[in-house]
Image (cartoon, rainbow, N blue to C red):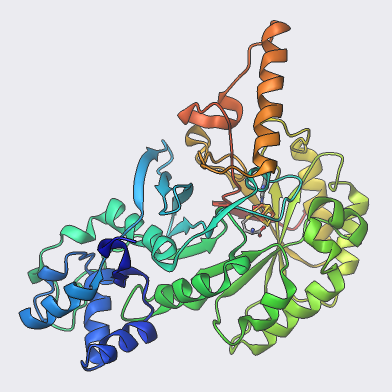
Length: 424
Ligand code: SAH
Ligand code: SF4
């Protein structure tokens, strides 16, 4: 290992770990808040420019630490104002993050892993297999970069900041974070927890706990531990009203069936100090889980479970046989739930032109898992077949504007939400 790699990366230290770092150096813990503010509020990644820290201390810091960010290798801006960035992490893999501006808020969808081991049948990230866990610096670095790219906070001169370190005008455009990018956040538990704490830490990004959401496919033991680490909001990827169907779509259900999952989610929600409810995510796939009967069954399943329901029309990707339901079956499904008394939203795809919709993102992930290889082989075989049969293969379908040969599309779920309306 080189000296450079051996240095501590301050980008990934939560407040508690930053305090421990300064204690170790024989310094006072208040240095931790100073440093967090420089990095996460002023966007400073050069220790030498932290002017309220003495030169000798800066030298001491530099001898053991540095500030490393993941690399942005590509930026795509959509006509609708959304942005997508391809982020290269230290393991060599790439992940994606997407920013969606809406009236009154800006949502950033962040990845927690390169690939995913859980292999949900409708998810392109699952087709890649698992590549690596992102480090804390790589997770929080996505938020840092979004702020930098969107508002340029890193170049704000120090005099624009008042004495308490707060900007005269908050220049930060990201008001909401959803852990709905690539990967299962609860399978990268410690790193995701530290990154969440930085998102919600006043000395760092100061986002409200209501505006930071973990999305999980249902890793029950991890949900059971959540309350000891965070009070962020929770979204649960349910996708089916019964165990038989859910086990087909979300294989982790075989290990942690619906009843256990709902019990565990209720347990977490009960520990929160306010009256937040979880969001139940339900990807609607034509002919698979979108029948009226499924909606009725779902209404019964959740009748004693306070929640909001978010319907996500399936976003197709290469080699998936699944299809998106028609708008009438989406609205029928919504209507049944609405009449049963649920608050239901339907995600409307944004950023189609940059391939950033749910399940459409492209991550040229340098993985070598067998699952990914099988997927690539199958994609190649299909392409050859198409060519032989005179069918023009439309690489845009899944690879979006980057036109990559293999779409390892993921599942970013950043979208406009339309509340359901009562029928008249
Ligand atoms: N692993 C976590 C978070 C990432 S997935 C989870 O599964 O919850 C974010 C959301 O996008 C999940 O609800 C997921 O089920 C959904 N999703 C994945 N692929 C999709 C696709 N092709 N179309 C629509 N939604 C998809
Ligand atoms: Fe993993 Fe979530 Fe995709 Fe399932 S839906 S494979 S848990 S990223």
